[in-house]
Image (cartoon, rainbow, N blue to C red; front, side, top):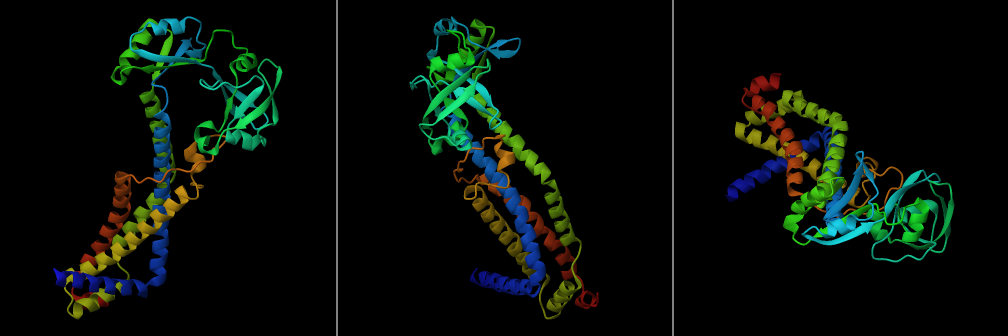
Length: 378
């Protein structure tokens, strides 16, 4: 076993020397190869990071959200819904929510106006999200005015700017009191936007949702797991869209691998012929060239993957953030939590390292089994 390891070490040393003799060509190949891995790994790491962030945030979302539909569109929850829901067995806790969207022509973005369930905000005051505050240049104590959809002008004082750590969920959020909310949106008394529910037994969530739909035919229960599935599908779709755009890079890599498999340069054929002439066996030549392919492909994979890691987790994935993140105007500033998906890493490794390494061996085998004189004369 020791002799085998020594032999492989000598072959690796010889392979490094051979790569050094064609330095310019191999450095260009390494750069193109690394760039391909970098692009693919960046897309995968960024999308995986967004999936994990969404999963973490949605884990605290309501188990069931109940909406009322009129003509297939969401409408206000009328009085009496809470009483009917309270009679359904299995419902542990329910909360009627007030929230809505407001388009701000100043920054050409939509804000989410919401009444917090557990926090009381004094009349005439607002709590704003960090991205909104950044775009409008707001700090605590500033005044800000909004013109409601009825044409009335409302002026509020900014009581607080939400912390940066919450920006992923609160970038465009505006929190205000219930009375201010109803006055701003002309909400009728006793009506709400939707109702959130928690179920005593998590295994009975679907049964409770079925009971809600039966008791309130004009309602639509939305389960937490359905929301999580929707976000996962959205990120899968965005990742697939970007990878489709990058199909040209994948095609270029396939052409590169095919070019490697189609033949050798005259210098490489002459080198193989000389090695065969001085006593190298076919297996030794194959192993030496195999190590050349492994060294290039493995180096390119490591360089590309590490560069992608730095790009996504330290430079915020600047190249792909606008496409994969999905916000139109108010982009939240947040850092993804570094995390490696073993299956994702293995898939990337398999589709970038193995094809090139295998392609290297085909022309080498053809040259290695040919008579040394014939090889050197070609």
